[in-house]
Length: 313
Image 1 (cartoon, one colour):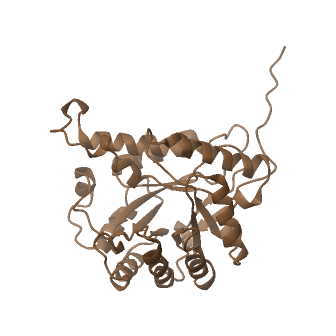
Image 2 (spheres, rainbow, N blue to C red):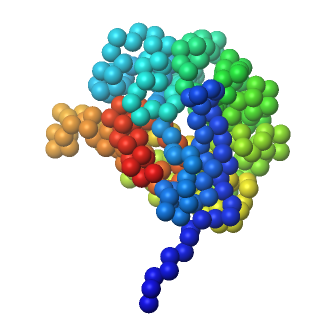
């Protein structure tokens, strides 16, 4: 009998969200097929790759990252260099210095870094907080204001602080809102509903449904993304039709495979190569599971994942 292939194209689709301004603005989402299923229907907006930089500078970064930014002495110079990284579509500024359990930088000091980055680059910008709920509530409000007119994505509004963060980013200052939940489709949907009820348009919301490095409970991440895409496309559930962004860098570079020194684990080989391997493996896996954008930091990882996306599209 002849084989009659069936199209996997769905009637529903993922929302298209635009980040940035001008010619270098990017669009994520918009597909009505499973990840990379271009044989079922055209995918207009390929997944995007972002480069993470930190307001804490480069002291604790891998050698390859430090080498790439050699000569950069300010956050503005680092941001500009990140924007030029081969394969990069956007820059993500992480304001981790604000963490009260770390350097506890003032909100004012962090906002100066935001302003410097905004002025230095012309590519889309994602602004991430320090993951301290109370500090991020104030910090991300001010960051949204400082980047007004730049159509940035603010990461992230959580269940504990979504009212303040989403109101500032999505309503007061016209930015995109990142909704972050903890690897559970029900929590992700609930947060989307709450933010939408505040008046934030659904095509101004991007989800971070949670992440983990491969091998570290990663099956929960995959199953959550699979279920989210199945509900969005197969069931036409509008409350989970937001595109997904996944910050990969922190998870990948903070596991033992990436952190153990060559002196401690000589049999494991190059420490930096291990970190790159974790970052690339994790990014490739979340993209195959449904993420529409990933955030990385090593130049080799960015180039590798960018090439993978182009080869599969």
